[in-house]
Length: 151
Length: 365
Image 1: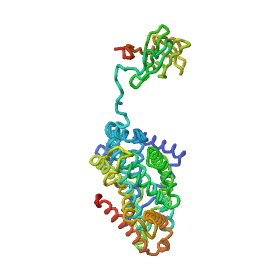
Image 2: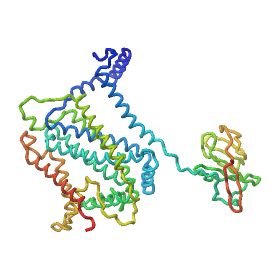
Image 3: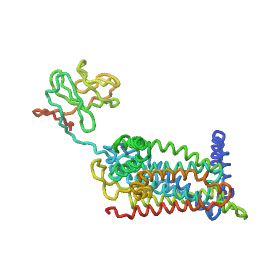
């Protein structure tokens, strides 16, 4: 194979090989660029609202109980403590993102996936969760419950 | 560069021992393509295959955003066209490549017919080819509905209604193809399943058989060339013919990109099941000649519904097309067969004229 002899003077063969390789490279880029951009999903029209009015009336939340509500595209949990106070947290467990629930028998928040426990302030008290739940601010305006992200 | 060469050699040997690369290489080197004045037609099959590969690639990409339900289909395509980066490009290429693929497939079919490449021992290659044509048209028909727009909805309404005119099993076919009595979301889901799962599976088998047979028998030489006494010229498939193929494919890709950019696929209005049909409703161009023929038939022929006669006619026509290698006994014996040449030409003329009439009719008269 004579063209393998290293030569300082570019000959016809090396020029054509170079030309072919760069064309093929440019072609690949021209295909891969749109495809890779296509595969990245556009930013979703996700609700970024920092405040949500719940479809739940304050009287419907009995002491020592809890309910899940929609906060944007994520779940939140509204609880009434045995003492009668309303509190709200992000309902996504800080361990692996399962949705937590209120355990009336334990009087605190619990995650069923890996047995994580949170107290009435959202603090992780037992099991694998590494962090407390994010707490929201609850305002009761007459018949309405308004939950907002703490600033 | 010596070490790189050695590494490459080692890799080659390692793979060769495990998958038999040397045998593949031997086969590829052995493959030759006859060179004569009709050689250009040899490129059409490969071109159709290339466009099919484009369809597979863009089709997979479209699945990532498409949602096959009456509630979401139109909106998901709209989102794809408006929000997703290069979404319009992927969908437009899918739509254009579909049309070009059917076009090259038709040219491939008629060139094979006219050059009598179906003669023994290539009858099964022909049968599998006709099967692939049917599958491709089914791809077109089912894919047309998926954006769930007005035109697609009524085209499917009409297209499936025609199957209802088939004697005896018509109403059964109608219900199975629609997934119910009417064209609804159930039809959409059904067409989606057929389009992305059933037809690709069938294509894989038939295309595999088709391509295998082409390798087994080699390229067919037209009878007129075969009869000539002068020595036959050939060109090696690798790399001479393959590189010419690639030039054709790159040209097709450039054309696709230009068509997609200047004439992107439209979306239109969302299908409304209770709105009147829009004026000038048309099937895809490759169904136009059949659509127009059915329109021309009188309501009753000899006491039988014209529609039924038309459908039976196309059924017989399709069966005839399938059996051409077995009916054309003269070509099989190595004699000239003017009858089948003229039948091919008559079919082409019929299709072109009816398609032309279909596109030039004044719809409000």
